[in-house]
Amino acid sequence: MNKRYLVYFALAVVAVTSPAWSAEDPIQALYNQKCASCHGKDGKGTASMAKMFKVDIALLDLTDKATLDKKDDVLDGITAKGVAKMPGYETKLKPEQIKALTAYFRSLAKPKR
Image (tube, rainbow, N blue to C red; front, top):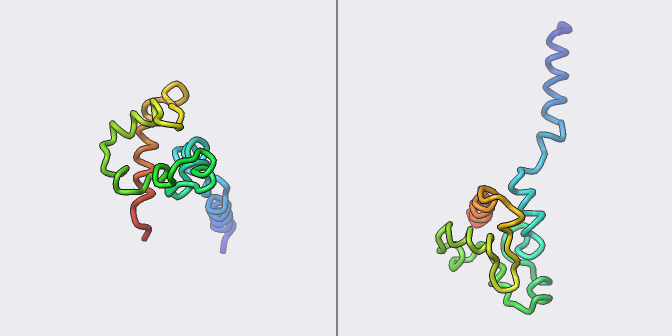
């Protein structure tokens, strides 16, 4: 193998094993930062938070039918304004981030292949 191919091969190995390839999606990172402590990384709710806030864990489940049946603008509004013990995020997040979070948690309900 000549040196040029060896260099290309080395660059390819570095690129594939680089931390950037395994970096978390920005919306997933935002979800994990703002939502996962109550709603869980899988969107099914966190039992300890349900107990702490004295709410049914079903209220924290973003993957249940009742939540998924709501229109995106309703879910965006809940994230923006808050509901019950959930704080609103309209002053902390941009509208496009709120919409992206709705799309992200909807994706959690889809079956994994």
